[in-house]
Length: 487
Image 1 (tube, rainbow, N blue to C red):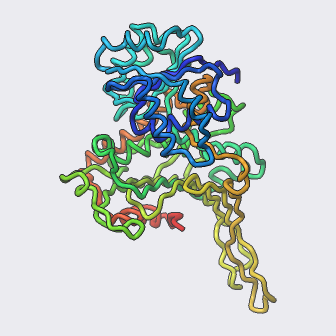
Image 2 (cartoon, one colour; image 1 turned 180 degrees about the vertical axis):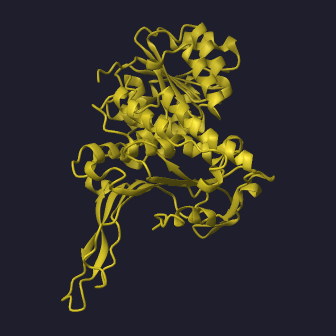
Image 3 (tube, rainbow, N blue to C red; image 1 turned 135 degrees about the horizontal axis):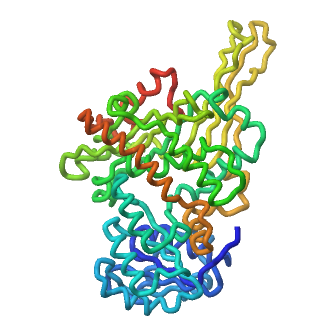
């Protein structure tokens, strides 16, 4: 695509945790590699009384804490810090916006805004930006999740932003789409001819998507109590992964073609009735247990009071279209799980007839595993003959054909997701950002699940920290003859 880099970047929440851990190190990485526009000026903003010097010191400390030693170049860090300036602003106070506009200055050469705030501040933020001339035709805006808590609130946010910014200047961020391995799903599917003939209901038995975390609440108690695992992880990251697996081949690699195909998948998701929900979902909450041999508190104990918010969800989903009719998609996410893992496991259908039956060869269906984190690899499990004279029959064993992206591309630096997404925001490429119709179709589906939980009085089942969730999640797959890919 034709790139249109801006000359200025305005970073809201610039002194917050996300900025320190991800945004500032990502921007430095782009700067160090010469990928930022030469004159790009970065203005940070947040509540408080920071100034240019104190913000630069905050950034220096963040880089020291979160960069690997091989990336710490004193001269490059010094030149990066010179790009930075700071202007305090309270987004709920319209009187602070003029000073912000004065600090940013002329935006005729383009301005990108990164807005990471509570949803309640979206309306005053965009209205304040518009009032002081920071929302014109040369300005684009990036929105960090959450974009609402249900369909109604999401539409309200989208309407608020759309009243000031047209869709082609709105960049809704799902950082999973910036991960290298996630983009490799497209390369795997559409860059190799041998998968496409079997990438459908005739060739695939089931698909499993797991996003498991070993951490608990950390410092997100306030947000998590209002969200829960379904809103936090399924509505965003997990459904985006499902769409990349299930989408039809786009005509070309472009923002419109790719997002059109993803939107079709979301519209094809089978919406559950209240009667369907108990049979197709499991919800859980972790209690005291051990993670990595360390005893940890339960969710309620971390909060300090009893809560019915789910920290685990397992779902059996269906995509009702020609390609996927009858293929279950098992989705699972949770906190305080046995291992930190994000992966997709695609189990193909077994061979129609085994000539090895009764001769010591128990055939296993082929499985394709795409691991997103902590390692990055693609693994195909295939059947192979064990060495031997075969006097008692041919013996087969499942063996992996493994492509480690960490090893294969060891000479190339692995960029974190926000480097790619920030650069695309600065240059105006919307391909890896989420369109409004995608967001709202996702909410339609997850709102129906929450409505089903409410109608049935569903409460989370407890599971010990350090396990793979409630036993009911195992039953969800095993009654279909399927086992979660937990190895």
